[in-house]
Image 1 (cartoon, rainbow, N blue to C red):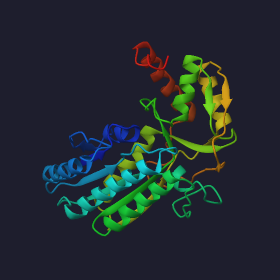
Image 2 (cartoon, rainbow, N blue to C red):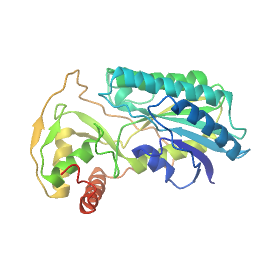
Image 3 (cartoon, rainbow, N blue to C red):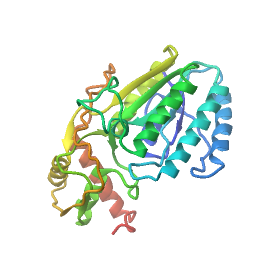
Image 4 (cartoon, rainbow, N blue to C red):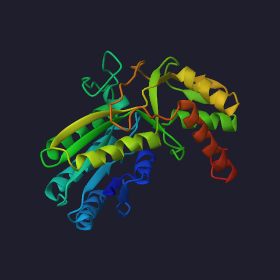
Length: 308
């Protein structure tokens, strides 16, 4: 069954993977002028158009937008939260008439950074350690408080998503950055201890989780469901460097520059069980190869000229 869907943030890594997934008829939304005072008005107007477009059909909205990362300033994160709050209020006031649901892409690394007793799952009490994590948790609460009494809401706490097409200038994406170091023969700068354990999920796998929940919510009861979206395989930074070198056949120098702590060394995750979705994760080695092959193509096409 095809579901009418609006993917907010379809230009990003996760949003674009959701938008190209099978089983969705994706709404052709106008571009949102992120970071401007007009963004809220554009989102509100597009919500009106989306409601008209869906009619009485089944629908889903995915919020996968956000420029914030671990090092983003508090001021920028506050503006991001304010925009999300505004959209939730608009959605509560102007729900499409058919059955539908709202999916919020959140961050497992952000909300579980200070949690104890890994592996972490939906029942683990969240304990963010920085402004980014606190903002993601606040977004979750806004969605619950504003929307969950009116339609089903799913909060997907994603592990470290990676894949071809990641923003090369954003301060995240360790696999992509390591691939660039291998390709260009430049040092890789690591800002966390090498034993640090993280879960890395290939972005198309993450998108399958999201799409499965969009379809599930059309028949779900009101309220919020929290999920952990992960590959189920934790890898240390040291192991990840080794995998990249093995896959690419290239070695590169590593500069270890610890940023200000605290450091959360063990972020193993317990993947939420979704029939037909969980247990089908792309092997990390396969995903690394796909990322590297894409970087090679970008270099050949001249798209990496600014980085060379």
